[in-house]
Length: 454
Image 1 (cartoon, rainbow, N blue to C red):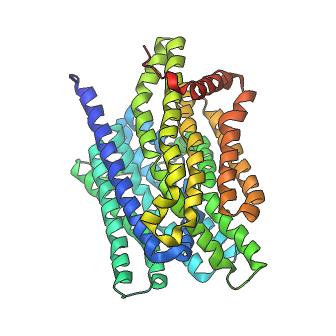
Image 2: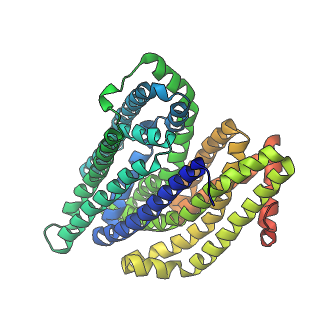
Image 3: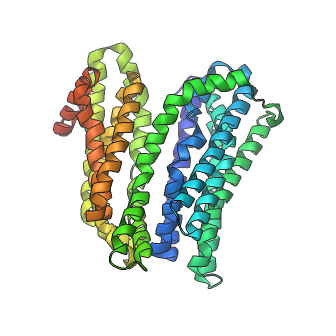
């Protein structure tokens, strides 16, 4: 029985987050399947290339201040209006810079008019993101339900717009090519819905948006605290999005040597195949994230109780991460092509081989996510920042070498190699990380010995 009100509040918050994640996962996955089917591999690839290109600059819109805002709102709730107003202003400035850089970058790269248009629209959607600071206020007050309801409204409305466009294509009211720009505008609708829902929820909580204020001292405080997280976020987003951009750019050059007229379409088709496989494997990361959030308090508590117990719980956590990899990846590796064809159709059959490779990548994703517990509890944020930057650099370098030879498969192998470097190899050179590296390896090679830590 959960007796304390604090415990019940935390449980309600986790329950709301779980519901939102499950709903988002299901709705976004189903919507993505139909969008991919009706746009086809070339147009779907073009849309994902545009969103991936914008994603390279996405960290600027977040400005690295999210966790800092939550922390300061908990510590100084009396400064709510100053924190929220200044935080929203910083995010708006970051979003404006992102729009400028994404637009200039697309023009400098001499992209086609339609691709530039997609990039500009998707980037401009981020100008509505500053209102997400309201989410941080609700998090600081443990009023997660209000924020989750706003996020659910975003998912439902955004998916509704996309299904309306799919219906228009299905019944012949427009072609897939004509609908493509409107799918970019769906990003704007989603962010507008989220902003509007946050504003309504904020007002319903008794707060007044008009009392927000921007101050120089608060801006300097937030920026001085957030710059490491901004750089860290940029490294993560570049590593996550660069594959789709490099696949298109490098393969366009390669295919142009064979047939210049079809080169770009073939490259977009390759991005489309890659994006389908990526969306499927990203959906599988959801259980691991939720599980680790539930385990985090026990690991943190164990650190305070004693080093032996702390190491034992980390060991069990790594064993569990590896077990989840085996349970998920082994069946996925052998059924990937069937899964892709069943959900996306015969056009995306080549994505089956890519999904099989992505199944291997789940090993690094699971172990790397588990390693985050050690990074957090040991406050090794500078180390995490350095490894994220080096990992992104390795990923880009290996992409440059492998994509022209192995196409999309090369991008996946580049990711696996970069994960190997920044999750395992770099730990050898940092004394504080060697003990954790030993625990990780022991967990992997003794995964069958999982037990309940005392």
